[in-house]
Length: 208
Image 1 (spheres, helix red, strand yellow):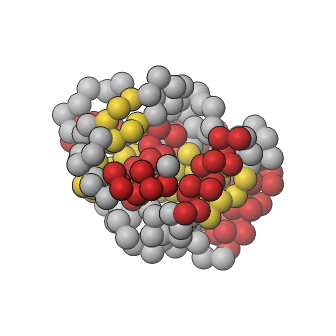
Image 2 (cartoon, rainbow, N blue to C red):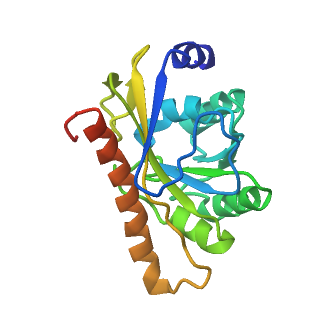
């Protein structure tokens, strides 16, 4: 699997777009103490785009999660095991250590099981305890196979163009009140969805 992704992934052509005033993270750039969030369906192109960033990804403790962890480590990623449903506190503490060490933490924002296009609270909690900003992005292939899974998993076809779309960053104050967590989660959710919609419009594709 590692060899196949690496071989096909080298044929993909990334094109970066961003909302006005947004600083995008470009391919090959060394990432800093930040939090990145994207939808689960984008895991494959994300693996190639961030493979030189030495970022750390939150991955579930399931059998599938173990397989994904082994593959991602071969691409230079680190992994913290946990999810929104199991070992959530342990996962957040692990990612807190990642941020404090100067590295980037990456979330599949809708978690390992969905629902699709609905972010969990984990990124907001991590930003609140670390002060790290949250970058919202989406990777949309021009041509891809779409799996019949809950997340409509995207498998980009060889030699396709992939739009990397960045939306406004979300910043969470350390003194965020309990009743303000949900509005911040909605703000992040809206940012990731805008990134997806902007990518679809850029490729002149219908929303799905």
